[in-house]
Structures are given as structure tokens and as C-alpha cells.
Length: 362
Ligand code: NAD
Ligand code: TDX
Image (tube, rainbow, N blue to C red; front, side, top):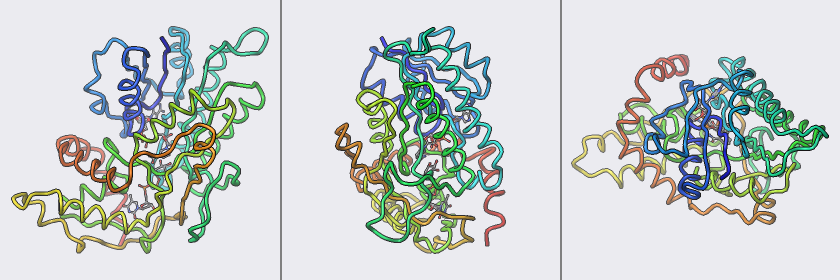
């Protein structure tokens, strides 16, 4: 039975990945979820699997060398899937330091502990040990408004925000371990994810939540920035396929050729909510294009992201299975059916954060 060490498993993508893996492999794998539970970590995302004897949660900071080394010492880890990170660009603009700590130093700790646990006296590694570093398309910077421009694995690394700079740095550290030690790792660079359990600081859940509450829908700049949206379960599947079928040492882009302007996304959400909410639901009257409010642009706002997924398709056979029209419907339905989750997440710290982030936007 393979043992997985998943970092950041209480966050958005990590919790969806754990669900995906336990659905797929059931009791054939053992998962250890290591998460610090920052504002973005929510164990409620995993409450349906609590108590399974092949799933275990350990609260730890990936920057804590001793805690991470102890987990490797006490368990024969076969796979590391490294999600844990500070992930929100706006937060990184306000407070870059924690991004450097978690994303760069935390990744260094993970690499070092895995290397120490897996390395043999002759400098080679124990067989069938693999580390997958989950990264982002934002490391490639920004594309022009040109429908034929894409990010390839060979595109220059050109990050702009403190978030993407910290992720690019962590990618480089993984590359250095691969190049220097032949460390058994892969890097994946994925486009914007959407789906259940996403923290409502990110565009899609924020727009769903604000629409239902009749609050303004803040659009940064002209609303024409483009993101390439991928349903989170398609990302989870890609990670598993890269780890099991990818060539060690290689980087794989993950994305679905699903580029949309932010304003298009907002309009689709409003239309879908209008369709899904029954006339008897008082929130239906709140859902209106009149809520759309253009606000001060994000500093250094990347214009367009678009992934060329040619390599992962040709070499591994992965392709996105969820059409955006289906994925966004499933996502909105999930939020409508889980309003208690949303209420708990948006109370407390998140509200304070929201005020701090938006009070100075006119
Ligand atoms: P998230 O913010 O929802 O979750 C991050 C998780 O990491 C949380 O559970 C948090 O508690 C945990 N964490 C943070 N700091 C930690 C630390 N020091 N020690 C241990 N745990 C810590 O993020 P997400 O959207 O799920 O993203 C997961 C990964 O995927 C990140 O590495 C991110 O860069 C990458 N990624 C995200 C997207 C996206 O669209 N969300 C796209 C591509 C890549
Ligand atoms: O209120 C908003 N208004 C708005 O116009 C918010 C929160 C966002 N936006 C815009 C900014 C972006 O162009 O929407 C777009 C998407 O914004 P985010 O949801 O903040 O995502 P993004 O900045 O694109 O980064 C996301 O995708 C790549 C994740 O947060 C990263 O972790 C991932 O690496």
C-alpha cells in the first residue's frame, strides 16, 4: 500500500485531491494530510472522510523542519504531493513576507526532508519514491491580448506578483534538486481552478456569495483580464496521472483551453444563479447585473493567462473532461447546497480581511 504525504490538504485543491484519490484508490492507499490550518485551511472540507483508517491529519507548519522530519521518520512515505502555500495574489501584494516563508522556505524544508528520508548511501534514491510540486501558470507572467499566445513548459519564467515570484522560486528549488541530486520529482504548472470548497476571496466564490447577498461585485480594472479556468477535479486527476505516468524530472503544464474574461465569468454566474434559484427564494431578487462595480485595478495585474496543454496530452493522455458550462453549474449548485459552509467561512477573520482589502478601493 502506497503512503502519500499531502501538504495543504485542508485547502481548496488539496481537499478536492484527497477526495479524488480516496474515491479512486479507496483502501489501496494511505494518506497523511499535513496542514498548518491557516485562514485558508478548513478541516470541514474533509469531514466526510474523518475516521477512515487510511486517512490521517497532522497539524504542522511546512517550515517546521523538526515536525516534517518526524513525519518522514515515523512513516515510510512513497509519494509527496506538495500543495501547501499562501495562494492569494491580493494578499501577497499587501504582505509578501509570509509568501516567501511558506512558499519558498517551506518548499525547501519539504525537499530536504524528503531527500534525507529517501536518499541511499551511494547518493541514489530508494526505488519508487516521488515528489510532486504543485505550481501555477502565473510563474510565466502575463500574455498579451492575443488569442494565439500560450504558455508552454519552455516559456520564460517571468513572475510579477510576490505570490508568483515565490512560486517561481519554489519551482526553481525543485529544479535544482532534480538537476543536482537527480531527486525524483515533477513540477506541474496549472491554470486557475474552480469548484467546491474554494475560499471566497477568489473570484468565482466571491461573486457567487456577493450576488446572493446583494453586495457589490468588484471588478478589477476593465474586467477584460483573461484567466484559463479548469474544474478542480480535472486538476486532481492530472496530478495523479503526472505522478504515476510522467517522466521524472519533467515539468507539465495543466490547463483546459478555457480562457474567459473576468466580466464574462461574472455574467455567466449571474445568469446561472437566475436559472437555478426558484422564484420563491428571496435571494433571487438580489442577483442582478446592477451589482457589477468597477474598482481600482490590482497592482501589476497580469493581463492574460492561457496554458498550452500539448505536452501532458501527448505524453500522458490527460485532457480536461469537464466543460466549463457543466463545471460552473456544478460549482454554483454546490455553493447553494452548502450555504452553512459559506457562512462559517465568511464569518470571523475573513470578514476583517475583506474590509481591509476592499475599503481603499473606490
Ligand atoms: P488554498 O489557499 O486554498 O490552500 C492552501 C492550504 O495550505 C491551506 O489548507 C493552508 O492551511 C495550507 N498552508 C498554508 N501555509 C502552510 C504552512 N506554512 N504549512 C502547512 N500548511 C500550510 O490554496 P489552493 O488554491 O488550494 O492552492 C493549492 C496549491 O495549488 C498552491 O500551491 C497554489 O499555488 C497552487 N495552485 C492553485 C491554483 C488555484 O487556482 N487555486 C492554480 C494553480 C496552482
Ligand atoms: O474581487 C475580485 N475582482 C476581480 O476582478 C477578485 C478577487 C479578482 N478579480 C480578478 C483578478 C483576476 O484577473 O479576477 C481574476 C481572478 O482572480 P483570483 O481569483 O484572485 O485568481 P488569480 O489572481 O488569477 O490567481 C489564481 O489562479 C492561479 C489563484 O489564486 C492562484 O493561487 C493560482 O496560482
